[in-house]
Length: 327
Image (cartoon, rainbow, N blue to C red; front, top):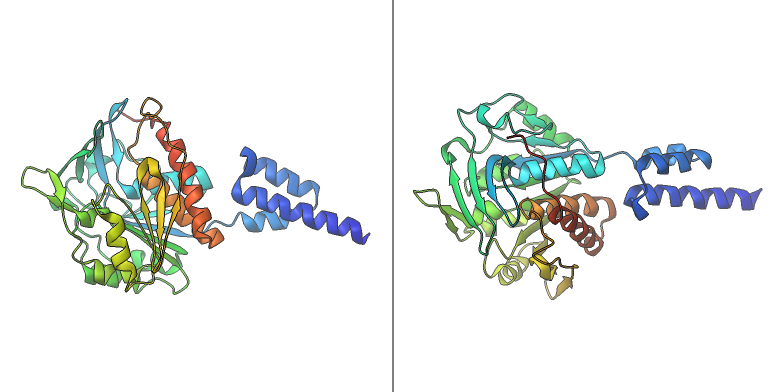
């Protein structure tokens, strides 16, 4: 009898592990069925409790010209992360942003605050990724101010287990970030995707490099920061500088070369399995999928290297697929 109980307990933990990490391509239904057969449905259902996730930042309409596709779609780190977390983890993230009615024909089925457009137009990005560095242009930036911190926003932040701030423009002030984060519970994971702070918008909309001058005040406010060498030419050296005064976990991605975890006295390289240019269908949103997976996996495991490895796998899948878009 004792041996039987031990075998059941081990099988139960294995079923939970399979569900949690989706090993070997098992579906959630298969994992639940397995758990039911061995009498541990409650354990697997407990593991299914997704964290409350809030993503604050800019959303936009994207006009994309990519390696092997041209399309108009919804865009932004916020929407890519929210949509990915929905599809990959059956999570129900909440996006907090400003947007106009012009994005509605493209907007995916996501939870969003406010529930109705609150601007005349939506931020518009033109992205050309056929060569590096990619060419960006931003339009309608005057409608992409930081979202108002309403009672509904405060309630969402207070309930969140993961809070991600993802910018496309450098117009979220230090004080605004502090005002947002003061409503977040102390044990929540807070992640910054700071690419917007590295962007200056010229009069004609052309996106050019910008120094993240607010970094010394903003980076220490977060538990996790992730950005790319594409965002800043000396991204790794900059991360080493930040790490001297910030406790945040910092991950710098390097495209096909993988990613680096930057510690105070070391850099841990986590390689990936690169794809050839012929294999890549669409790279738009790849970094956002990486970031979303990183936050989710790190929250679940507290193992940053394992989270980076999971993020590599998710980003690779994104590179091989083109989204289905309303035109």
